[in-house]
Amino acid sequence: MEFFDTSIVEQIEMKMIRSSQFAVRARFQRMSDDDHCLITSIREHGLLQPILIRPFSHGFEIVAGHRRFHACRSLRWRFIPCKIRELADKEAYEIQLTENIQRKSMDPIEEAESFRRYVVDFGWGGVTELAAKIGKSEEYVSHRIQLLKLPEEVKQHVIENSLNVSSALELTSIPSEKQNMIVQQINSSDLTVRQIREMKSLMKTDTFANNSGADQISQSTPRLLNRKSHVLKLTKKTILALRITLARIDNLIDEVHSTVEPSERAEIVSFLMGTRLRIHSLIDETIRYKNTNTRKEDPRL
Image 1 (cartoon, rainbow, N blue to C red):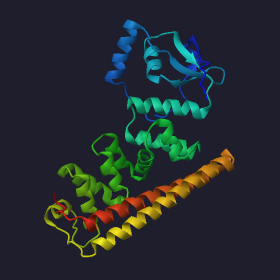
Image 2 (cartoon, rainbow, N blue to C red; image 1 turned 90 degrees about the vertical axis):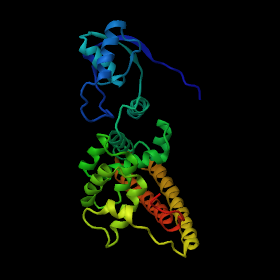
Image 3 (cartoon, rainbow, N blue to C red; image 1 turned 30 degrees about the vertical axis):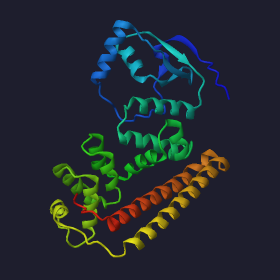
Image 4 (cartoon, helix red, strand yellow; image 1 turned 60 degrees about the vertical axis):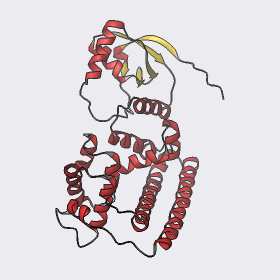
């Protein structure tokens, strides 16, 4: 189907424009060096690209271009060039989300929160649909949403970039009371994801002491099991079964979106998404079990 752009470009009075009611960035952001550069550029060269707005409640709402709008407001502009387009709430949110992801302006927790709102709070579509809309893989979206299972203190480490996403995902399957200790070990010993997994394995045994996890990683060598081939065969079948279950859950989510009224579907979608995330965790746990019990090389390498 061919797309026809019916937008209109006009100068709109600043006071008639409001921020988006579906802002993907919920946390207050202090003005950055990039913002100062943008203000300087607009002051010297003008606004090179109009902001995108839509008609909304006796005025207009920003869809894309929040930074440009606030930069022009700081320069005390009365009017701003705008591209005006009729957009539904879902379309406006998708455009805003895609723009922020392309600009890499959101931290992983902000992305996770925006994905959750799309899938669960607003019930606009499943993980598969959202991933296609923003140009990311389904795994990327699912993993981001999993980060929301972490306690606030650990999330803050992710926001501050003192804990990367891969390491943070490993913590989602650890009891919350032990997560801060693991984060301290990660930061102090610069642990890799593989070492974090070994630490988690040690936590399940009596050999793991309060602060000796990192030492245990460097000193312990798990036994090579004679049942390697059986473990490999069993885990492959388990992963396949879980992936089949994921596909069936996706079909159920699509069915809910096509058969249940929007006002009634949020709770059902939330339950199915929670189930889906638990299945993903089971797949990850199965893969870790397979790797731990079938690898031939020294796990310390």
